[in-house]
Image (cartoon, rainbow, N blue to C red; front, side, top):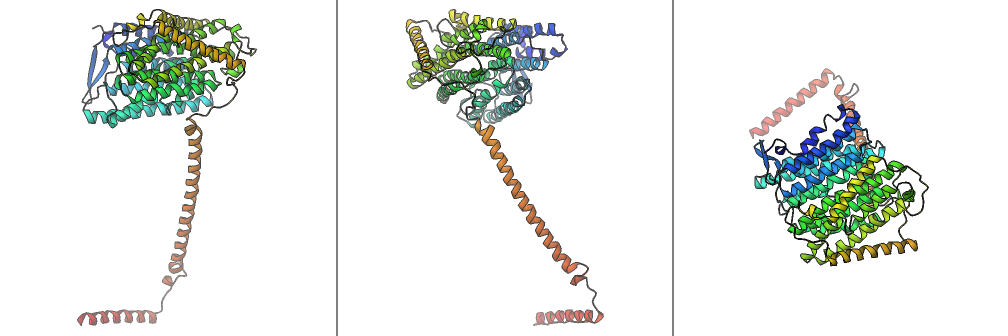
Length: 567
C-alpha cells in the first residue's frame, strides 16, 4: 500500500486548506484546483477492502474503510470540488476558499469513515465549515440564516452522537454498518441523517440557506451535505421500508412550492429536495438495482443540479437578481449560459443525458418490487420537476418577456466550469457504462430500451405541451414578489413570536412575584419594628416594681407545676 493510499483522501483537502491564505492569488487559484485533482487521484488508487484503523479511548477507530459504495461518492465529491473551485476562480475571498475546501474535504473524509465516531467528527465539520459560505454574503439576512443553519447542522451532529453512544451501549461496537430502526439508537441515527437529507418537515434549512449563500457558495453547498446524508442512509439503512414512503413524500411536495416560487435559487433548492426523494426511495427499496440507482442518481444529480445552480449564479453575478419576476430575455446577452441551463434541465430526464440513465434505475427497481403507488408517485414527481426546472426556470430566465437587462456573458471561468459539467452530463448519458462500471453492485440494466425511451419522451412532450397551454391561456402560476409559507414558518415566525410572548408573560409574572415579596418583607419589617423598635413594647424600660411582679409570677408558675407533678 502506498503512502497516499493509506490516508483518508478527505484529509488532502482539509489539511491542504491551511496554507491557502499564505499563497499569492495567482498560485492560490491553481492550488485550489490541484487539491481536488490530487484527491481524485488518491481515491482512484484505493482498493475495495482497504482498512486503516487506530486505537483510541478503548475503541477501534476505522479512519479509512474502502468499498465500492464509498468510492462512488469519493469520485463525484472530488469532481464537484474541482468544478466548484473553477467556477469560483475569480473569487478572492480567502474565507470562502478555506471554508469550501475544508467542507469538501470533510464530506469526502466522511464517506471513507468506517466507524460512527469518525463519521461524527467529519459530520460536524461539514456543518461548521459550510456556514461560512452563507455568512460570506455579509448581509443581515445571511447572518440570521447562517445562525439557523448552524443550529440545525450542529443539532444533527448531537443527535448522531447520542445515537452512537446508545448503539455502543447496545452492541458494544461503533462500526458503521447496517443499523436499522429496531432500536432507539437506530431511530436517533436515522433522525440525524434525515435532518441533513432534508426529510419532510426537516427540510427548510435547505431552502432557507442555499439562496442566501454567495454566488459561488451555493454551487459548493448543493454538492455535498445532502448527498453525504444519502450515502449515510445507503450504508446504515438500506432496505428500511419506511424510507420508501418518506422518499415519495419528499419527491412530491417540493414540486408545488417550486411551481409558485419566484426566487430561482430557492426553486432549485426545492427541486433538489425532490431529487433527494428519489434517492431515499432507492435506499428504502434496498435491492441491488435500487442501491445502484441511488448511487448513480447521486452522481448524476450532483452534476446537473450543480450546472443549474451555476447558471443561476452566473445570472445573479451579472444582473444582481435571481427573481423570475425581474428576469427574462437574457438569452440575447448570455447565450452560452442559456445553452448550459437547457442542458442542465434536459439532464434531469431526457434520453442521452445523465439523469435518464440513473433515475430510471430507481423507478424500475420500484416497479420490480411491485410498489405500484410509489411508482406512480415518482412519475408524477418527474413530471413536476421537469415542469419547474426543465421548463419554468429557463423560460422565465432567458426567454419570456424581455426584462431589459443588457449584461455581459458570464466570466470565462464560469463558462468553463459550466461547459465541463455540461459535457459530463452528456457524456454519461451517451455512455452510461462509464458510470455503471463504478457502481456498488454488478449492473444488469439497459436504459435505452424502446419502451423506456418512448415512455419518457411522451411524458416530457406532454408536460411541455401543458406548459405551453398554461402560458397561452395565462393560467400558469405568475411569478410575483411574494413570500411562500412553508413549515419553517413555525421556527422562523411563530417560534420567535411565541417565545417573545412567553418571555413577556414570565417577565410580568416575575414582576408580580417580586412585588408580592417586597410587600411581604415590608410588612414583616413593620411588625418587627413595632415590637422591637425604639418605640416598641419590647424595647421599653420597666420599673423595678414591675420586674418584681414578673419574677413572683414566674416563681408561682414553677411551684404550681411542681405541685401538679407531685400529685
